[in-house]
Length: 326
Image (tube, rainbow, N blue to C red; front, side, top):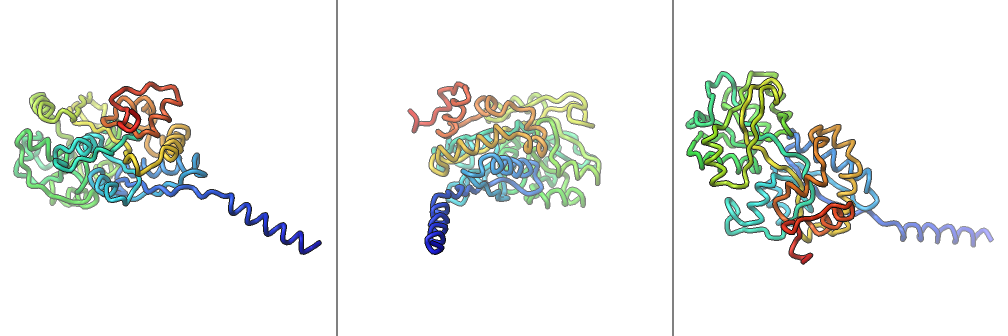
């Protein structure tokens, strides 16, 4: 009798083990650790794992940003990535830096901010306009990032040629602190500066450069996917009114780098567990994450995202329906 009980217990253990389903491991390419977008990504991963941990297990990987993530997802090193949708659009279409290397399988997941793209310079640099960057040491954005690519494209359109100081985010900030470089470009949040820039302000006074109406018109004529926003006095705390580019920053995948079920589990965590995301990245709380993800996406949604948003009662415009669902 004792032996039969022991055998039954052993069988029960094997049945439980055999019936258990390990969560799918998902590699999530993000940005530099000091970036506010890395902070958001880490909070999003935590929210997803907390809500949908029985289905997916998200691992956050620090990378060089959008361009690096596009490369990694194309090579199968990550399952999804974070980036500026302006860059993702260019990769999808095969234009700009991606000419001849289109990625038609790219799909949108969700958006987490429409971010201020701040052009930061030391106040004592004497640089007061974007045009005055010509010939001056300046980092156009973290090396390999979408910000870097967009900034260079804009500077080329308005024919301003700085002496580029190409660097990681940490090196770019250190160079400005040490007065080896005049400034850099860095995306922050919705009307707020990136944490690295707020840190820099503790060491030296800074200025945010303004884009003139003529510069804005010329850039938009040539780069239709670039958007600008006018900020009023003190709308960005402690700074006078200025006009600056903004970036839509969100998550993307390939048609086959995530399954529909995985995407649905991920979006359940993002949408139904906003607390950790808002605590880490307050700008997220200003979004209607589902509607804004539909309004601001520049490429088709992943089929799993279409199914999820439809299940929550949202209408998906034709431009966002991926070819595989038609």
